[in-house]
Amino acid sequence: MELDFKKMGGLIPAIVQDVNTKEVLMLGFMNVEAWEKTLKISKVTFFSRTKSKLWTKGESSGNFLHVKEAFIDCDNDTILIKAEPQGPTCHTGSTTCFYNKVETIK
Amino acid sequence: MELDFKKMGGLIPAIVQDVNTKEVLMLGFMNVEAWEKTLKISKVTFFSRTKSKLWTKGESSGNFLHVKEAFIDCDNDTILIKAEPQGPTCHTGSTTCFYNKVETIK
Image (cartoon, rainbow over all chains, first blue to last red):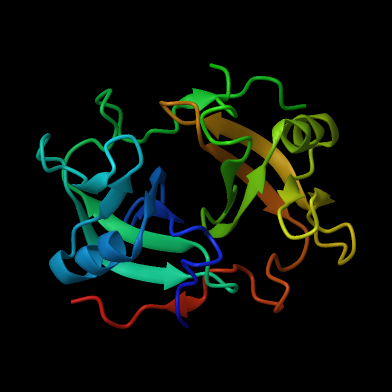
């Protein structure tokens, strides 16, 4: 059970789910360093593709995602983190980043 | 609310969550065609990066993911699909692809 960063060009998608409500909160990408820091400090840390640096979610807003459990998928290229959110996850103030519902579903 | 495929190099991560149990089942990538087909047939359809073609989950196993709701995140680069799974989602026979727990969480 080793994450296959190489297959993914260095960046693996990491889903964050609320450990209590089971709501999916956000998705970000992690490189090896982001993943190792996430495990070390128990706060979700991504690699920001726009800023090209590590980004611990909440470092500016205070709205950290405290890691409670983590899972790796069957082909070792996706991470699922169950976390306890400190405050709203989305920068818009919403609990989750997934608040835009697609209305075209039959 | 328009998915920004361009920003993502043509491929957007799509999380699939069980609409009833709220368990996260799998993650795949969609290009424009996969997203449009998913909406059209109401079955989760990915773009297979290994096979370079559309892949409707369940087309060989019969274990389709029937789309019930879909959401787009705040910056239009991730999809969350709430689906009703027909059978186990993982090719290993597991309900979810996320069955490998990381044991190093403090």
